[in-house]
Image (cartoon, rainbow, N blue to C red; front, side, top):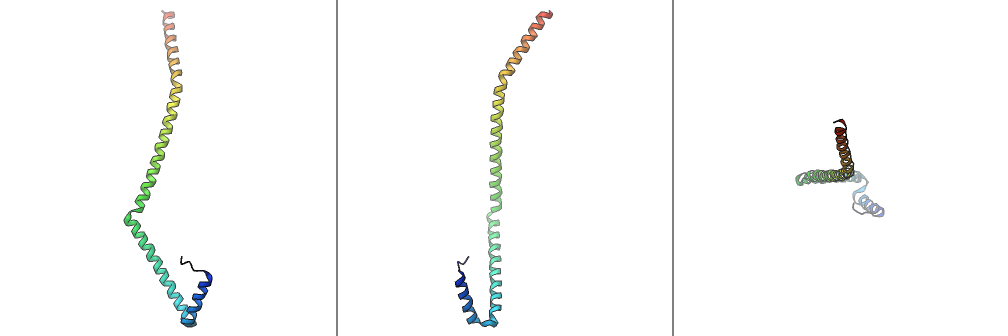
Length: 113
């Protein structure tokens, strides 16, 4: 976050110990920790508020819905393509069966008549 290496951190602690002394150092560290916590909470609060104002949740939801719609459309197109292929392969058989049925009906009518 602050890009501080361990030796730099040790140096800062040593300077703080010399400046504040061993009596006030724990209180100063505790206070510093509280301030960092408040700063972090404020940052997340502002971030959440801005996201709500901008409508990031709505935008994410819309993107997700659009992705689902695109997937549904793609699947519908795939199913339609497959159905067209099946229909194309069945049509000649259906015509042949229809022709055979009418031929059988005509033969039955002439034989029975």
